[in-house]
Structure formats: structure tokens, C-alpha cells
Image (cartoon, rainbow, N blue to C red):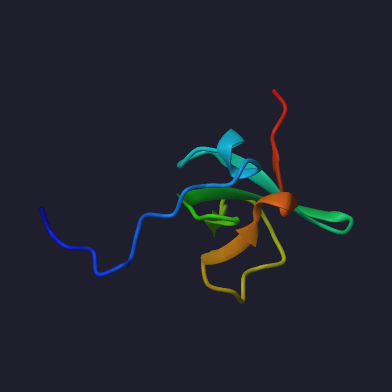
Length: 77
């Protein structure tokens, strides 16, 4: 088995356990919300990709960012 040199795979916290990779969720910031897709789960946050299918205020940003689990909400069906 390969040696990891002290770098281990992050384990999501209790807040992060309700999310999964590939899920579309809402990123909530104040009174604004944006659909994002979870790419990777970290310990206290997730790497997400902005959903470019609709109009949004993030055209000037790159597609990926890190967002705290407390700022993510599941989309109700």
C-alpha cells in the first residue's frame, strides 16, 4: 500500500454527512441563494461548482469555490 505522508482523506463533520457528491444544493448568503453542485466533501466545507444553466451574479468568478456546510441547504422537492 502506498504511504500517504500524513495526508489523510477528509472526513465530513456531522453537518456534512447529510450531503453527497454530485448533489445540487443551494448556497445561501444573506438574502441571496445560488444553485451549486457538490464536487468534493471536506471536513467543515465542500468544494462546489456553480450551476451555469441559469442567470446568476457569478459570471466573473471561476466555476469552483469552497463553501461552509452551514451555508448550504438541501433543495426541497
